Image (cartoon, rainbow, N blue to C red; front, side, top):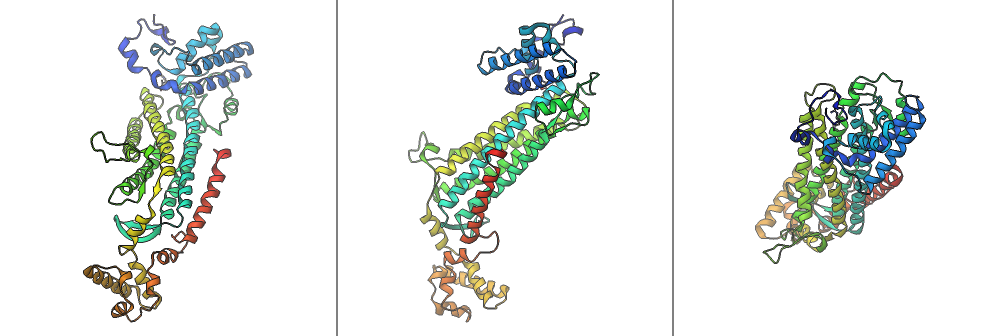
Length: 465
Ligand code: ARG
């Protein structure tokens, strides 16, 4: 006879190594709170439907609360032989309260139970991620406001392109994170569907009340097909997709910060408390945190690929393959949360070296578009204006000067349309201020973005999240 909860039809107990291979307790124990919460709701429903007695339900609920307290206090012995969190809790319950414990699993299978636990767990975790996104967004806006007059070169092809406000650049990341937030809202919506009552796959012979359980656990919807309820892992795939895209964003900002910290750029300096030194080279101050976040992006993408591959071509309904969903998802959760939290600190402690940014704008030709636009405003077709400005740049490069160093007479040699106001037109401040189109980099537009960002944070903070 096997000692397992499902041991009835077995003559032998499970091989030791097989036990260990198939057990998930070492990682699914982190869902103990959800498992107990789900079981309490289930027991209450069973009693309300007269499937078990009120007395048994009371015993079950009180027993489960005690187990919860024991696990919280670190006083619970998890057993690999009991496979997973579901059977660990159930066995402890039966040991504590006797036969009533054996009634808890009525009208339920571990297949719908694990789905319920994971839905509850994801719902809670997604809110935590959204809170951390808001925290990082807040630091980005703070830094944008603190440095609202700092001009730096905007890049394309990693070549200096046009002068922009540094705040504008930071706010681009705010916008990306806004979309991330919305994607996690979608993950939440898909996790907010109640699977319990699907049984192993086909529903149950008992007169259960799924609405009751959904109400108890505050679910917005109920799976309408029992096979789908136990087989669906879309919400986890969506989580891993959203997490991957978020990590793409963090990796891009990481890469930029790493470049900006280099001596070659010297645009920012990270707080000493956020960097590490070298065991050999005494001068080093390394941007480890953004480097690690950049690196960790890869492992989150890996988890997405792994789960897509696990679910691909998997026949309905539950298959043990699905147990493989958890480790990757949990690791992605930890990685994303940790990355967001450290990144908020990095941004908060990041010193902006405005003089170096300024120099990078002045000692280059990122104002060449403005010289061309100047001529266009004097009615020269843009193509011709582009040509004139290109020749000006070429002329400057040959002489080792910048556009601002040319006299009006020299400008006029390239086009008679140049007037005394050309020098003002190509000043970094003018270049930035005149890009006042909606969503552009002018201080006026950036102010609009900052105000909208504050509103957005306020609207999505605390209450909603
Ligand atoms: N530990 C399992 C999992 O995570 C729970 C469901 C087990 N169901 C079963 N029929 N063996 O997927």
